[in-house]
Length: 200
Image 1 (cartoon, rainbow, N blue to C red):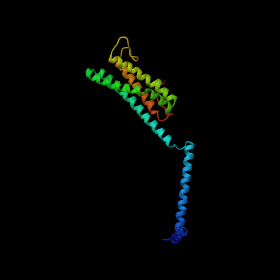
Image 2: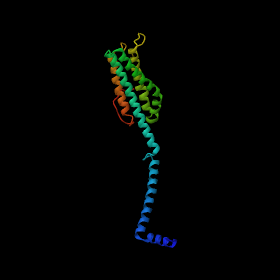
Image 3: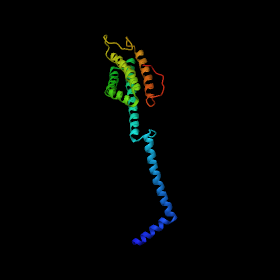
Image 4: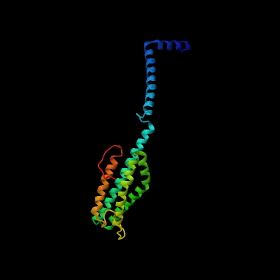
């Protein structure tokens, strides 16, 4: 096909009803795409639609929340297992295994503690950080002292929850911490969520 024939064919297509329809559709689609992009930018700018960075931050916050919740309940769980082993008078080798599991969880917890506190500040604000730092963490600390005394009794050291190292009192401390953890974690996704919990 020579150049004259090509030009004639192109003119014929563009002047036909089908050609005009296709051209109109292409123009319409281009206009819609431009308008959609502009609207998306406006929605992101006014905060009604998250951009990719915000979505990544939300995903990061959700991941942090899950990991913190898992770590907290894992530590509580292994604490309870150790106390149960002592209460049930398990053989020493079984008590030793439960103690080692607890120490592993404790080391992981302490390794991540400052990161978790700072991340709570970043993702949820000062109130949530304070609830963790001055409410949840001290309970873990008190219970740890009680477990350490159960492990190696000493007349010089007392369990902060019970001067007689009463296991029933320690178990009550677990229940309180479990309740406060539940309220703390269930409120992580929504700063305005209300939950009945111990006031700190």
